[in-house]
Length: 192
Image (cartoon, rainbow, N blue to C red; front, side, top):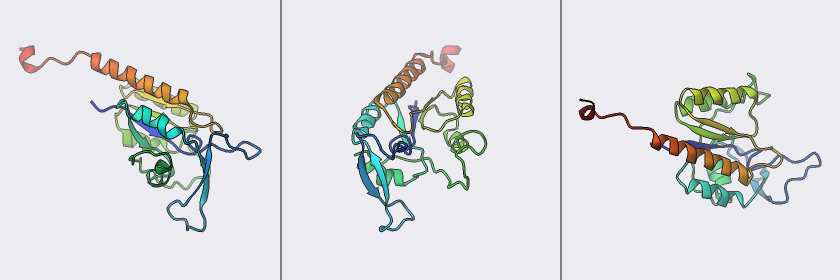
């Protein structure tokens, strides 16, 4: 029985959006990184909270979830962001580079159709800052068909907080308890 996926976004989650005055949380440190396709003399400045690495590892090390990057950073999440937080290499959902001007071209998060296909019927907790009511309806529909789905939506200016990971961990723990408590189907010899 595979643990549910923990799908992690980066922008607005690990990298907060600046306030109107351009400030970022005091908990975050500045880094300059060079994403795939950019030259070394044109880095991108990001802010990361060094505490996020240990917080994520506390959840990952329980074995209750299988962490996967779900971000437009794609493979750069593993090669650039993860190492700055002392995270091990994590797989990523191979999202396309959409030609869109809004993150909700169909009224819901552009990643959702790709995530839905990638997940199949696997349970998942997805942490992203950009869900709409249609995404929450999708999660409820997946859950109703037996693919437990929890969406956690941090404030993009504050980013990931300890309570978000506590919610993910508690949800995954309850899901495991329900799955292990479910009676097993009788074997053919028991049914005979």
